[in-house]
Image (cartoon, rainbow, N blue to C red; front, top):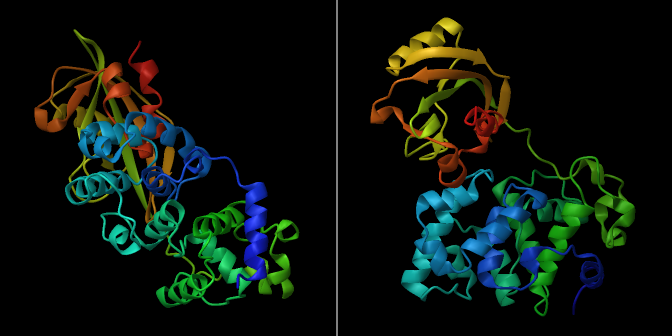
Length: 354
């Protein structure tokens, strides 16, 4: 027999679910791509990316066959680029093993590259109607408050216990709606830290944390480690060529932070003007002019880049190992620069037209 709070949650979701492009149809491919894009990314940011991605890569076959550089360009600005690489790796496995279809099995979904328990649960329940939970941060928060769990929800044993309890509650006749309803509740009402809108919650009367007036203190999470601060100098090296104005970009190493992506030349530390002039000579270029740009910051999960920028007008050429000179068209259509450099890459359309 379905629990009363589950019925009330489903009724609330039916009336209040936000219209989102990936909810138009429970197509497994669309559900999968949307769930991967939504990992650690806001819905508002994902919408235009999802629409553009689906327009250009509407099938698993198209995703498997798209050149990696084009895939990175479609993903440009979403961050966590390993997600895109794993999507393509999984798509290629699906072509090899399942003739381009997603398997209607939680266990087989879980075996694909980049698909963890949450994504497998979301695709299995929403697209295939399999009664399994899909537990992300929003759902963990809802469950911790519903059950008044005062242990650290990020501890694997606690997460496993909460997932096990939730597994017994997933309704067999509406698993996808149930999982989406919990996510929707966490994203719109059962908000983090001190902002839960308990008075608007459809299951408030069943919530132990609300009854004990401790919802604002839950869920319990261990204090994260402080991020390491790293100062970096970013260079906009610009030259006038026969083809027009160009900027130098280079590839990052194949492993590590932002692995294999294009970037603006940069180095650890903050450079003085004298340092800059020495650096330009190392590139084998002739300095024409330079001026400082604004400082910027980008936050990764474990590190913060505190950046200063320099716009440097140069002449000459560089060895191939130094990078690649690209114009505004290539930059707009082919080269994907990580959002870590957005404060400086945003200046390039103007600088390359001068």
